[in-house]
Amino acid sequence: MTIHSSESQDSRTSSNFLRDIIAEDVCTKKYGDAVIQTRFPPEPNGYLHVGHAKAICINFILADEFGGKTNLRFDDTNPEKEEQEYVDSIQRDVRWLGFEWERLCYASDYFGQLYEWALQLIRAGKAYVDDLSAEEIRQHRGTLTEPGKESPFRNRAIAENLDLFQRMKAGEFPDGSRVLRAKIDMASPNLNMRDPVMYRILHATHHRTGDEWCIYPMYDYAHGQSDSVERVTHSMCSLEFADHQPLYRWFIENLGIFPSQQIEFDRLSVTYTLLSKRKLLQLVQEKRVSGWDDPRMPTLSGMRRRGFTPEALRAFVLTAGVSRTNGIVDIEMLEHFQRDDLNRRARRAMAVLRPLKLVIDNYPEGQQEFVEVANNPEDPTAGTRQVPFSREIYIEQDDFREVPPPKYYRLSPGKEVRLRNAYFITAQSVIKDATGSIVEVHCTYDPASRGGNSPDGRKVKSTIHWVSTAHAISAEIRLYDKLFSTPDPGDVPEGGSFLDNLNPASLEILADAKLEPSLAEAQAGDQFQFERVGYFCVDPDSSEIRKVFNRTLPLKDSWAKIEKKAGA
Image 1 (cartoon, rainbow, N blue to C red):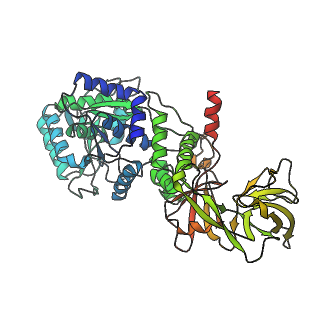
Image 2: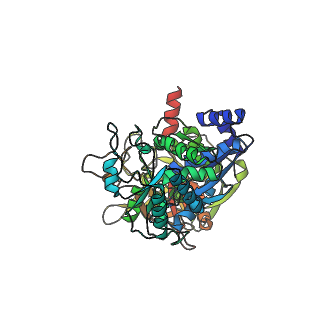
């Protein structure tokens, strides 16, 4: 297990009820001298998203804090929706987030044991085979205010139930024709206790067991027993499973097996984000995004491709904390932690996204020089690099206005600005094309201001970045923004769809940005702060002859301002 000491210490100093429960159980020796055991149990039917990051961090960090262990267990009981692709991606994402599991397990590892325990419940008169259809079972279930109605097959003889269940396993019956149900209480105020289904018939090939099984356990039956097999002491899950806890305990108590305990905490919900795997799959299948790892997706693979770091994600999750009440966290809080992390680690570079050519008329033709630039002012150990400078450079189109608006301090005719780490320049004239668009700006420079400082002490109000035209490399820039345009994209009017809330401006592609030559060596995943522009990383689509950069985030940090205002 990989735990970063500073984060682990942070988790110890901020109290939460999950830690308090575990600490009390350790103090009272609830499990004797057994090691604290947790697990992260995803279903391999999609890619992990930012919501899963909370569950991963909680399970791994708390287990580590108490000297315990965490298993990665795949809840692979639904073969029609599960694939090896998802199994592989989940393992990559957990490791990327910074954790290593004690054991790699699958619910399918326990299919044989789960079947034997089902037989045990049948023999004890606590489970029966039901011939009702799924719709009839729903009709018999009752409502929150009315009790359910017992199935006419509820009181079958034990011998008949055993025979039918064994024949279900042998494949004698078609899909949906019979189920195995627990025999509990059809009048229970908790609908989950009204004879829940334990097994259904499903002739489907499983990604691990092939066609060995044609009956598959339901989640509520398989989950607690899998916990028990692995001697999980604290089975921590999100609040939607709170009403399932009595059933979790019922199976364990009636089987007389290791007493794993289920504890619920709030889900992580983030503004401008949907975390429904069904809806995320819809986005992928309808090609609204390029795939599960599209940098606009809230999946961990998408966030990784966009340039988010596991360190920032862990810091965000730990700060968001845990509670027993669901809430929603502002996405700007996550972005704040990411900017803070990249500000400390990302190498600086100059990149002109929308280039405008600038000619320094009094700079000697054919001359070039190098200016020394810090790789990261926040990290003195990052060193410096030499950036070439010449008579012709590119600047951003937005950094020049022929007719400047009020309070525009960047370059305009007769106005002096600083070229970052280079010289003071003053705009003199422009060249336009046939449409009247400016294609070239001419200016003069002050040779005595090398390094960006004037010997006579005069001040300028603006500093702009640049790239030498003779040395620039061309690159594709993908400017990503929020995938949805509203804070709650799932909130739609009757007859509407969450797809109506997609942000049409979530991706802008700039095909011919100009970058300083040092970026020619950048590799996929490398992260940079493009000065005055934002944070970017190299996309895997890059090649040796053409780089592709994804914008992780712009430089603006709204959350930092919100925090500062709140603390004022």
